[in-house]
Length: 110
Image 1 (cartoon, rainbow, N blue to C red):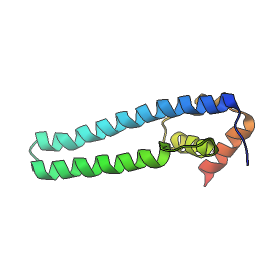
Image 2 (image 1 turned 180 degrees about the vertical axis):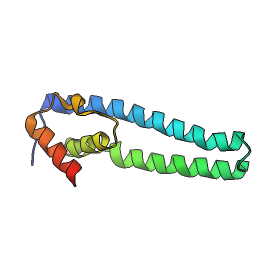
Image 3 (image 1 turned 120 degrees about the vertical axis):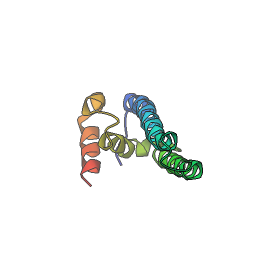
Image 4 (image 1 turned 30 degrees about the vertical axis):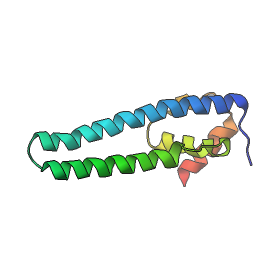
């Protein structure tokens, strides 16, 4: 199994901090879209409440799968996920070794 360097682990944690903030931004924007339907009287309060609750519940489950209890052996897979989802760019991976970048690339090809 491939082992990240201390520097790469630190950089991965920094990237996760950035990507989770971007994910929160996206979730808030999506929640605004749902609530806009309520403000425009296109759905009942009950429908909007349930839609918002379901959306946020699914979002929290996604965050838990991606970030909770993340160990260093999962960092490259998680980095591949946030890269694929557009929360980071390839440029943000510049501090990683070529081998780490290749592993991330392979994960994204699956």
